[in-house]
Length: 124
Length: 189
Image 1: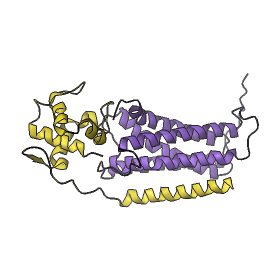
Image 2: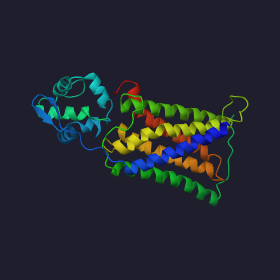
Image 3: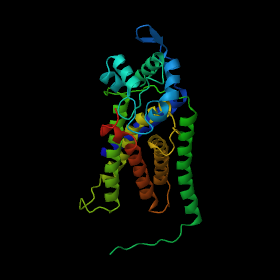
Image 4: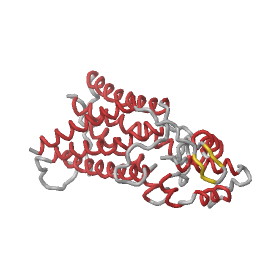
């Protein structure tokens, strides 16, 4: 009886492995997110503009997808949304810096900071 | 006092089988790594199953996989009489050992799927956490394939399967240490 259960679980797992392999080959990323306005008067496309700013300024420490290269610098969008329900608070962190993270207020324009925050907030 | 049983050198056919087993694992590792590097990763989420973020989901599932793998390691040691407890080996222990290995793979799959499909292989910061995570993640599945093959091929050296299992478990520990450990200790997230 138990032996058959194990065999059933093994068979199911083989099916899941096959499904994963098929999905890896055929699944396509979703299209870009629509433009969003997170500060008055500034409408940005987080994937296009924010991603470019992120790549230039943030990727070295935070990793390509916010996964973190040198811990503890991982970005988790869900945690960001919890910690900063108001995006302006997160923008302030980028502008003024926090802990080991330097201030970007002098290096980036308000539009760039808003864009990169919008981009980070939609990372999964 | 420890006794070491010295076996003769493997016969040529045995060596060929060992090479086949190891080459299959190496090929799997390389294929996964190449896919992860070449596939246009989008950084998007996949499934979070009851968790509020991908990071939480992946961290807890990786931890579950490691716990299951550790339990499989213990049952494997007992099956091979390397552990004194329980005094008599239950007849069902081999099935439990297989079930734990299967569940380890099953639990790790959604995590690996997201890593491969959405994040890709990371070379940035070579020598850093994510680089080693990428290497260990791909190598873990390669070692898993080698072990599965070794289990099904006859007349292989007795030491091969435990060694492959041990290396696979070690790689899973590296995967956990370079990812979930950071989340669970509050260093990220």
